[in-house]
Image 1 (cartoon, helix red, strand yellow):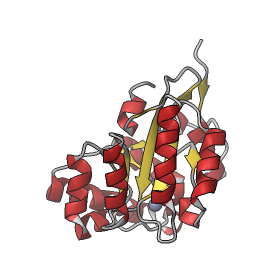
Image 2 (tube, protein in one colour):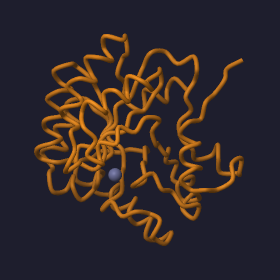
Image 3 (cartoon, helix red, strand yellow):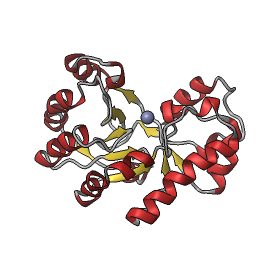
Length: 227
Ligand SMILES: [Zn+2]
């Protein structure tokens, strides 16, 4: 029998402080990690595109022939369309990370819906890109938006390892954290718009390490395909 670990669901529930096993659990959430996962891993980058950070990250990914998933902020995609197009052209996946990255904790259901839709519309209309992957800013997803998420068939993707690059964590500490925690099927959270971040520096060590350990890098949709 297959044992499922729902790490990300656990994270989500912890963030929201709602009791587990409520009706919404299996309907919108999220990502289940199997003990028996093959040795695959998904790198995810949030908050871009950014003209410098995203470009540097794309250069590293290209060097190692690694594909990743970028959860973009709609207005940044609008500001930097060429960087967005490069992400897509180089075979990476795109997810919706709202239009302007407001934390959902402070928004009404209407405002949350609008944040998701404006990002979706921009990706569709400007770039012809469609995605049903959604990651809420800061991983916060109030219950008042569950119905919309479900009706629109979004899959909410959080993460199982947070590099804490957003907090200015030194590259060596990020690498150590991953070495200690990593296991097949992980979704790793990083940012291509972390102002104080050492993401690029860390990535130059993390990717060769994981390749040496026998991991194959996949997009989030490919990872979900194993579920
Ligand atoms: Zn974010």
